[in-house]
Amino acid sequence: HSLCVVEPVLIVHGGAGTVSEDRIPGKLRGVTLAAKVGYQVLARNGSVLEAVEQAVRIMEADRFFNAGYGAALNIEGDVEMDASIMDGATKATGSLSGLRDLLHPISLARDIMEHSGHNFLIGDGLLSFAVDRGFRFLEPPGQLVTQYAKDALDEWKASDQSYRSGEGGTVGAVAIDAGGNIAAATSTGGVTGKRVGRVGDTPIIGSGTYADNTMGGVSLTGDGDIIMKVCLAFDVLRTAQLTEREIQPVADELLDAMSAALGGTAGLVALDSAGNVAVAHNSLHMSWAYQRGDTVAYGASKEDFNLMPATDSPFDSLPGAT
Picture 1 (tube, helix red, strand yellow):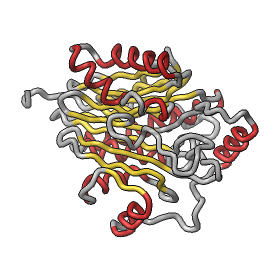
Picture 2 (picture 1 turned 45 degrees about the vertical axis):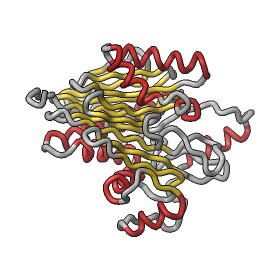
Picture 3 (picture 1 turned 120 degrees about the horizontal axis):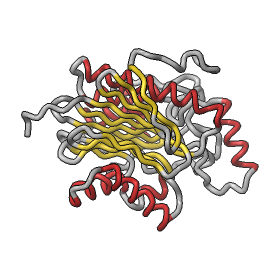
């Protein structure tokens, strides 16, 4: 099996939910850039972990996504972030929750995986680990808060405050290299108006993120409080493996089964061990993109499938381009 050469692929999502038309171009610009940046790591023979980390970092720094800068606000108007990363070759994982004032939670999650001796850190111990590892927190605090996120919180407070997922916006990436190594990474600000200390599916291995070289890799987005009840990331990969079916139809079925049983909506991007891609969501929108060879595919709504050469940047002329 080790002689099989896989064509490297990097796929990302920018969150499942309902996105207003005026924000779709910004999301597409962000996911296509993230896919290209992550793919460049693979093209230079970098590791799949480095590839997914770099792809997610692009979206964490982009105000169009609910991760890092631009993250959703909790009930008190603060950004509290969750993230996780997993190495499909070793099953090593790194997760964190409730993180504030750090632009790139995914990089800290990777550090937890590689240097903490544990899988998951929170609270004061997470902060002291981050400081020990040389991470720089933003001073003064609160710099990850955007006007868009403030407006979304005001809107939520003025509504009946039922947890409609809104834009969603968790970000994630999955990659496979020529040797068949797989990694997955996911990062989020959670849901607007959430209680302080709420943890979603994103940092929970098997729910928000999973990678295993023999099965594939997946990153989830959507209603985290529901996703974690069905361990969706692991279930999609394991079900596909056990039934010897492709991930795409399995993902579509399990998403619909989850929603039928428990409500909520979700989306995911996945790769199988051969490098086949799956993009599935039962939310109205989910921005996604992947690069394979010198072609980038991308979309934002159900029937959306667009292709462009990796050298193109068709979104640069759009309003709001930075």
